[in-house]
Image 1 (tube, rainbow, N blue to C red):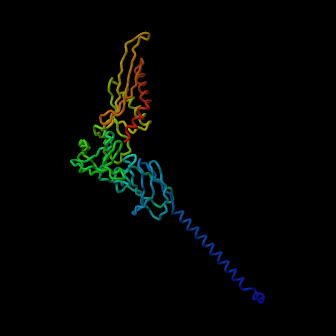
Image 2 (cartoon, helix red, strand yellow):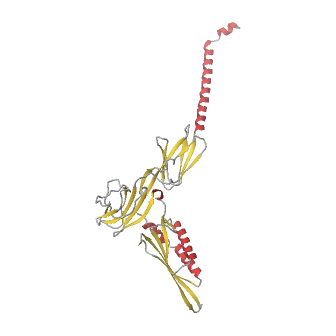
Image 3 (cartoon, one colour):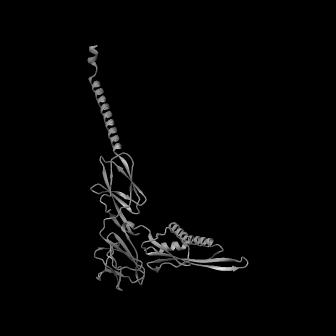
Length: 359
């Protein structure tokens, strides 16, 4: 027996040992890779940032302010959470001063307005809401030339130096008809503005930082049509309802106001009806209600009515009146109801509002 063992080739034993070692190594490596993959999965989660504001939000991460991505209004952004410790995310806001131009990456005024996110595997949903205010020491002037084809310019206080806009790629001081310019000003130094070449003074008021003031030149006068804070840029403009002509009861007025609120919303008109406070827009409801004496063959009084809708901005009529005529019935409630239905269905009037409000 010993003689047989001594004759067995030695290289076979060595080969078997080598193969065994390789198999053990592969097994360990596979196990180690599996462990690493499992650890990586454990450390990764999903953070869902949902934008509840009307502004585009730019998210940055950490003290180095690393760009993470942008979130459009009413949209969400999924971010992989693969860190071993909590991370802070800071929202910066693009504020659309005009439809075609925005202030970019404006920081909230509140230093505590950020999101500290842990490294949990769980899906985390974070809602981005509107901050109370933004960090901005400037005020902004929007000036639209709707009247003079030769162009105009704007200066401030007693100076004759032309102001230059910030919403054009080139330096621009002349405002052609149909153009809208945005100026950045120091509110502490601004008392009023002046339009050239007519040298008319306008905008005499106290200006505040973080606010936008809008003016329109109609060819004769410069009208202020809006003022709002940066947080209110996308909010609807306030409008007051004014009743003139024949007296309407409180219930009848409320019925008209209710249908106007619904209709403005249905046609996406950027106006919101207010009961009190300042407003540059006024919607006038004019009515003429008469009672006709009894006539054959009915021999009963007939109520006839005419209504009209008018829209004013800064005291000037903005649209051609919308008239509703030949409303009649023996019952006053039915007359008012028919008038309300006609006001509701005046689609052309509401579409025209959207057009004239565009700068």
